[in-house]
Image (cartoon, rainbow, N blue to C red):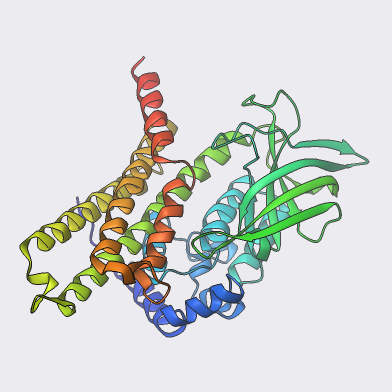
Amino acid sequence: MNFTLSDEQNMVQDALTRFLHAHCRFDHRRKLTAASSSSPDIWAGLASLGILGVGIPEDQGGMGGGPAEIMVVMETLGQALVTEPYLETAVIGSGLLRRAGGARAAQLLHALVAGDAWLALAAGEPTSRYALEDVSTTARQDAGGWVLNGAKSVVEGAPVASHILVTARTSGQQRDRAGVSLFLLDTSAAGITRHDYRLIDGRSASDLCLDDVPLPGDALLGEEGASLALLEQVRDEAIAALCAEAVGGMRRMLQDTIDYTKQRRQFGQTLSSFQALQHRMVDMFMAVERAVSATYLATLKLDADPVSRACAASAAKATIAETARFVGQNAVQLHGGMGMTDELAVGHYFKRATVIGSQFGSRDYHVARYAALTRAQAA
């Protein structure tokens, strides 16, 4: 199978790499995370390059790309350790809006491509762990509209979001697969209490309290009570994209480690001359290649049937959680004490890799999910 990038994909990668090299260097990122996790200038730059619309159809203002193009973008963003909510907005948000359809979704997609919208998905709750169907937030009809009540936790990108996609139960019990609906919430709506905080990787998140939040009738996206399958599909797409970001970060940690060991001297020799350390870096390289292969498989399986798609996504996520930790720990250790300081990039990459390891499900969760899916498929 040919994994060579097309000319168009290479152009997107080169343009984005040049932009990030000019505007998202490590010293700039340190200043940005000290004040705010997002920059309107960088977001506008991504919009001007067309990066925000890579996965959006051309008739909706996008570039008409697919999972492979998203993979290229995410890996490039991972190498630069970009903190902008691209995953939350251009992958998860746009994926949900495109498939849910409707006038409001189409309008927001055009705003997204232009860089005028920032999205976040509020699906997690204090007791839900990684189960998308575990929803206690409720939505009831009232005077032609809807009223939301409930709480959402660890909503990444919410502090800077202009709109939030919220899962709420319109029927059934808390863990029923049926009855989960998706709503579009303007962050300026009344009844929202938001607690913002910084994650260990420098990104921002919020806990939300929804107290009788009024929504218009067209805030419902898609079919009432039937959003779970859509959410699971977009989550698998987000997992594949997140794995690509992790690959970009691991490539950078490996290269920084190689460069450092070529410069640092011990006992009159460079660290890279010690055979034991060479073996360690070869092991890191092999781990990165494992992660690349798993990411490719997950990306190529996104258009497959739901079970095959979910199996590939879980296999990739479990692999990424393991390899990112292995590469990150070795990179920090080979840098010595400096590896844990804010002055070197490797520590920041390791923190991001740590968060990625649990995002959308830990390694243990995805191993169990993969096992359950394959058993069901074999039955």
